[in-house]
Length: 495
Picture (tube, one colour):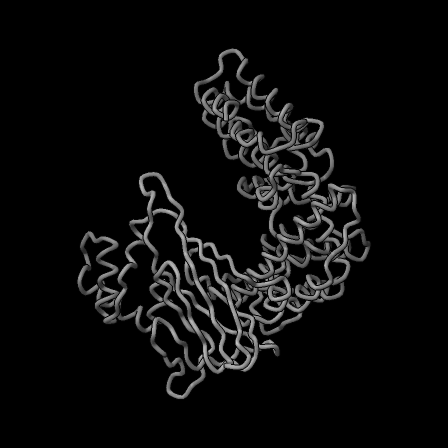
């Protein structure tokens, strides 16, 4: 936030003064604050509340456009929820980086803003300004931009300029517009994530009501526009293509429904892969490299984008895609790309998957860290009935229940698979219960970490609650149970 408020040069000045004053000393946050303030001669009146006041600010923004006056206003209101020991909170100093996007998808030049009785000119040395930083310091305040030729779509909190929870009046249409056009990569990503969460929650409701699942064409268009934008950073594209995780969506439901969330996320991935098949294939082919592994941003971004595209394609039942995945696996010049090809292949049960998993183990069996990833990959698989595959891996030469990292990879990995750990028949819960009792006799600390997977059992439906509760009661009734496991299991049961 300091750099956002002071710009790069101002932040550099603050750092220089900070080192000049305090090099070799034991310093405080207040010392750092003072250096930034004094070096730049600015007033950060209530900025130190970020260090002393607990809680994340919730900021609400309401916009309005006056076509006659050509002004665009933004009304901000902020609230910091009460926390233990601090029931009453003061307004925070919140830097909000902001731009206005016009109907053409380009940023509108910002000339001036009226705030707190003063008109501030924003242009600098005759140069147009497209992003400005608003200083929100009061419980409620308004900023009015002048010379705005049309109603814009505000791009608020660019670059994630402050760690707040933002609630704006942006419509879904506005979000789709930002997803396709915003020049700020963070807000473009955030628009996609907000829309994806809304879409997934809506489809979960449809799935639960036995309605057909339909992918919003606007969401497809937004993803397609990002995938086809050659100007964007490849690492950003990779992140923008990644849907919210199943756990994130389940946390937003009143009653967690692993089956519905998994079905919906799988449906969206398959639809996107099917509709954008050729674009994704081209992405994989255009980001290949036969060169030696290089650890720098361009190569990391290239690999990330290629691997995300390959993972999408892996959701399709297509012989051409299978051949493509095998080619990427066999020709990979580094572990990152070979393992990512394995991840794509791992999505579909069958002979090809089994052969490639066996081949990977043969190649890497002497590198225990890599084999831990190999175990975790299989444990987290969404292949139906995967609990039996995990049971078999308990007897694999690569697994040793006395080795904590092996346990975390295999057993912990399995608990990270919502669709199999939370299987409706209770097979996942029974498996974990059995392993915890066995593991407790060998390593109570590790066993207690594993049993914590049951800690949120009341978030699920009654059937799953009954099954999870039975396993917790079984664990607590085990002879010679350690204090470690007893504490976690009993607290989970009583929660």
